[in-house]
Image (cartoon, rainbow over all chains, first blue to last red; front, side, top):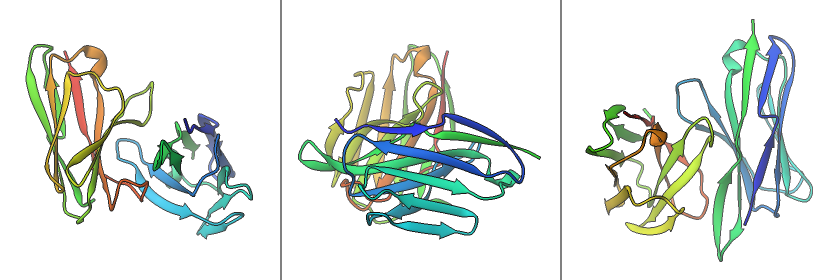
Length: 113
Length: 113
């Protein structure tokens, strides 16, 4: 079945450094979504990418969807302490005759002030 | 306020107890989900309901019994759980079960003693 791999599992940075998390799917995706879960909180939807090669920005966050629609990345420029949390990608693809949303295992980001 | 409300937020139960988790969504969605989140498996899909019908059971042990009386309410009945079932149980909803954007509740922290 469809698998979504996300790396790294953990990332620790100094405040002001950049951060990137990568997501790879074993199958071609219809779209990919990104979620953020703050410590002690619940996952919250950030963005959805649909088109091949799509790039979207939200302030310091840049999201990319690969040309083959099998990989994606989230890049944060100049991290701040408010960026701490776990970032999940979720790929939507056909599986067993219907579309399924499969989450990666997440990248836990910690930021040292 | 997420639009998806879960109760109780915290639950401690013995292995012989019977308890239930409750979820209500106010978003007019048709699909509802139960996810289990633990250190070992960050976001593990358990059950999916679409228009009150169960469309997915991810090989969940029978000591977890879901109930969906209507599209707005979802329960997870718990019976003779094990300590390894201690985790955060997240309810979620989406417009349909075809991998639309997932809206999570704040979760119910379950401890089995």
